[in-house]
Image (tube, rainbow, N blue to C red):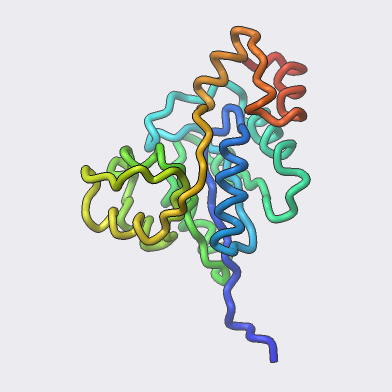
Length: 201
């Protein structure tokens, strides 16, 4: 008999994706497989003060369309625009609360890159957030982060996922694109074509 009590496991992957690159995609694919998630929601943000980011360079419509192009051949990946439709900064806990209200049958997990960890204590209601959506942290995991509060450390340690990480960031890619440097090794071809067509950076 089928067990109808089994909840769908969905990863939430937020970011400005300005632009999305293979580092984002590799992180999501590895976590999808290792943690046996059913789906991953990519959620482009207006901007993320929690991550210490400046407002995005590319318009929100363009960033959403770049993510759509990057993930269109991966059926387990979906773009959601909850944060783009909301005015002002994007706080992850507000989005997770809304998603849980809309989809109470889903068990959400928070997908994070290792580079995010040092700023995690600044996130809005972070301890509550990690209770609501357990973190799955991908990266090389060279060491624990001793500057993080113990409760956050425990949550992160449980979901640590050792995977190779790309030594590139969206910030560095924007600089390279502005300098007209080749970025095909870091950015999917369809996304790169879109960037050039719309003269984004």
